[in-house]
Amino acid sequence: MLEILHKDSWLVAVNKPSGWLVHRSWLDRHETRFIMQTLRDQLGQHVYTVHRLDRPTSGVLLLGLSAEVARLLSQQFEHHQLQKTYHAVVRGWLEGEQTLEYALSWQPDKIADKLSQPDKAAQAAVTHWRGLATVELPVPGGRYPTTRYSLVEMQPQTGRKHQLRRHMSHLRHPIIGDSKHGDLKQNRNAAEQFDINRLMLHASELRLTHPVTGEPLILRAGLDEVWQGALRRFGWQQLAYLPALTSGDGALADTI
Image 1 (cartoon, rainbow, N blue to C red):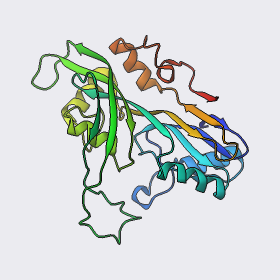
Image 2: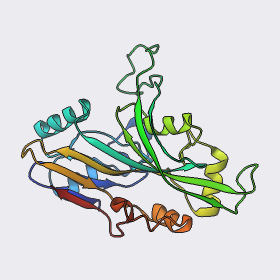
Image 3: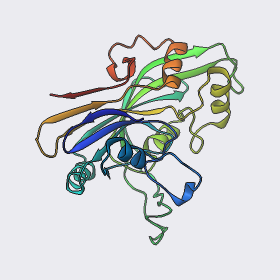
Image 4: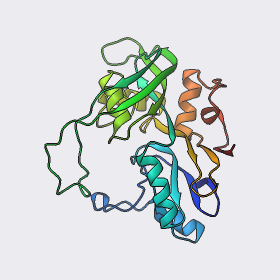
C-alpha cells in the first residue's frame, strides 16, 4: 500500500518510496513494483502522470485523476508555477546558502529522446540550496580519520535531468548514495557504518495552486526508516523548523 498524502476528486499525491519506478520501463524488465499500477489498484481508478521522480528518490509524487487535470498540473511544472523543496545528506560540510546557476549538459532520455540530436547545447540550471546542519563522526572516511556529512535543503528553479544530484556533485558535496554522480567510497562507508543503503534525496514538500479550485495546496512527505535512522545517528532529529523531516508518522497535507 502506498501512503496517500492527499486525495480529492481531481488529483492524488503519494509518498513515493525509494527504489520504486513511477511506471513500467523496458530498461527494468524484471521490476515488479510501479507507482502507477499499484496506485490504480489501490484506488480502483486510473491515474495520470504529471511529473517524475528518479527511481532512488523518495517523496511527494503528484498524479491527476483525469487526463485534463494531469495536463493542467503538468503546465504548472513546465512554467515553474510551483515550489519544490528537497532535502539531502551530502558529503562534507556545506554551510551557508547560495543560488547556484550552473548549466548542465543535456542528458537525453533513452526512450523519449532516442531520435533527438545528441549535440544539444548545455541547458541553464538553477538551484537554491541552504545548509541546515553538519556533523563530524569518528569513523574513517577514505583517507581521512573522520567522516563529515551535511543536511541540505534545495529548491530547484529549473527541472533538468538529475539536476540536484549533478549540482551537488559540482559543488564537490555529492549526495550520499548517489551511484552515478557521487562518491562510491563514501557511499560504501555510509552503508557499512550507518545502514544508509539508498540515495539520500527526498522530495519533502510541494506547493502549488489547485488546478480546479484555485486554492493554494501544500503537500509534505515524511521520511522512511533509513532517513529517520540517519537523523538520529547524526543528532539532527531535533530540527523543529523542518516539519516535513521531523514528523514521525508520515506526511502532512494542508490547504491554506
